[in-house]
Image 1 (tube, rainbow, N blue to C red):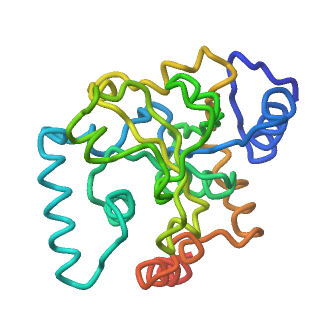
Image 2 (cartoon, rainbow, N blue to C red):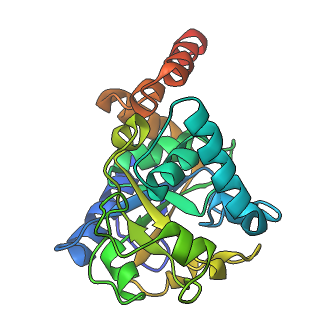
Amino acid sequence: MEINMDKLLANSFEEVYKIVLEIKQEHFKNTEMWFRGQGLNTYLLKPSLFRTKNGVKKERELFYEYVRLATGIGLTRNNDWENLIDMQHYGVPTRLLDWTSNLGIALYFATTSSINDFPMSLYIMDPLGLNELSMKNEIPILTNKTVELSYIDNYINRKPFPARYPIAVKCDNINSRVKAQSGMFTIHGDEDNDEEIDIITSLLDKKSYIYKIEISYKAHSSIKEYLDITGINDYTIFPDIQGIARHLSGILYS
């Protein structure tokens, strides 16, 4: 298969893999590859907080109410970032966007949220390249006490000034879902709070930062076969009671 790097389109898992391999060989020899799968290729790369009306206005209230209630049931964390990551993985809108270092996990999320006959998408990002836009030469670890990022100061209070570009960040796998999903994040600034655009997609023309592969719905079955062979399923992605229930339901109705 000859790959047109200006229009990346895959009709099977084999074609997805070939495109990913070529991108890796050409542009990711000395840096990490992060992936994000989306069930519809027209979805924006936008955090849930920015998809929600009045999300940013309610952000402070959401965060402090979550911390209060979580503490009340004995779920205490070491810092604000750890609380924010828990919020993200339990479905509370945040300014975090999920990424993974595992291609199969990204394809799992693309296929499980796909819509019949509509194309899916796979994004590939160079996190260091993205962070260079914010004058950072590393990938911060959110739960590391030495990190020079403060959720409350930089993002809630917007001091010393509002964040502009998204920043790629890691965490210390504080919950089982983050660990199981090889989870990484981008944390987005207020400039991404626009209903019709997202900053990361606007960087698609900067080929060293991000690529988008459009995946035909025809690829769904071959991707599912790959996930079955590699043991990626509802339970391995969500290693908790909810994941067990989803996995068993999948067996029942398969």
